[in-house]
Length: 272
Image (cartoon, rainbow, N blue to C red; front, side, top):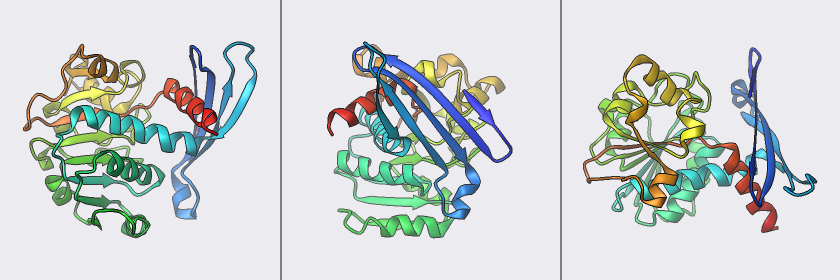
């Protein structure tokens, strides 16, 4: 559920996962907060037991998102990106971008170069400087088109409402991880990229009919529902093929989902 005002959006969603319980997460998204030095996204998740419905935990949403979003993206990349991927480009320089860099560099230990691009270059520079102990070079890029053409994996984590990543820039064999768009009127990739890349999602039910990244090009006719080849369930179970060649451009839409919030909340509370 979305509630919108002039400057802020309230997003609330819930799910039940058998054996784990019920979860309800509510967050506000205020895009102008960054200019004030405040987090763009703020909120909390309530976790309830499945048997008695007892409130068992209140978890800051940033902690859930830090683990969940990066884990979802990197799982998609392990199934779809080329195993020999060496260059990671992260588009955006917020909290999600930070967690993506940590996760990708932990799982893809063959990465030799990390690049960051953000509309606010100083923010990108600050993020890069915070990774002084990274095992490979990390640089800030000022020309997104050039950086995108040289990357093996591109992960976007922005608040863009209009496409910022163009299909004309992408080299064959690249894996695209689209993270930022979460509403019906938001997207990060243009029609060319969506129509030429082979499309995958984390979960059909929480992405295809809910998020602008897919809804907008489907509505315009640039792609169709049938162009979305598989979600993580199909890829993991082997009922749908993933990457078929080293020249294929794979596009993965990480839409999140309340079921993942519950899973991650359970993980967080069980490890404390």
